[in-house]
Length: 156
DNA sequence: GCCAACGTTGGC
DNA sequence: GCCAACGTTGGC
Image 1 (cartoon, rainbow, N blue to C red):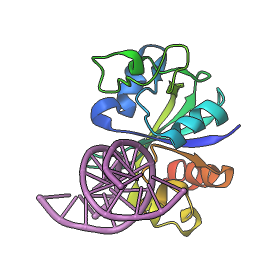
Image 2 (image 1 turned 180 degrees about the vertical axis):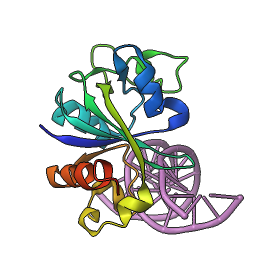
Image 3 (image 1 turned 60 degrees about the vertical axis):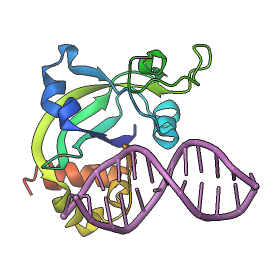
């Protein structure tokens, strides 16, 4: 069992959007970064824990808990010429990009990034490292427990 | 809108 | 294979 933080722009898909979806599951399509792809392709397993993070918005931060809900499979948008995620270099028999499905587990209070940064114990979280731009980052079990127990269920 | 940081591209 | 230029991310 591993843990992850996954960024989503709430204007594209907020945690509330995820909650209102049928079966509360969404395909995490559109990842076009090799490092992030490799996490999905090589390291994620159904049931892994996910901190659902809102990025590029007025209130960036953790918005809910989710889980990995499928093994990796080819990202359909790479083959769709009308999609902004279309990749002409990717072939059907050797797809370049994959995604997993993600399912909402429960909504949390919004834990702002500034609050995460204020906790010394979280200083080496990958997502908080200077210059980090990865849309998917691993979360250690220690950080996962700390965030859930101290910031989410602990109320601050 | 600014800008730091990083990934990708392409000429050589 | 080097590396400068460029594009993107994303908090502020």
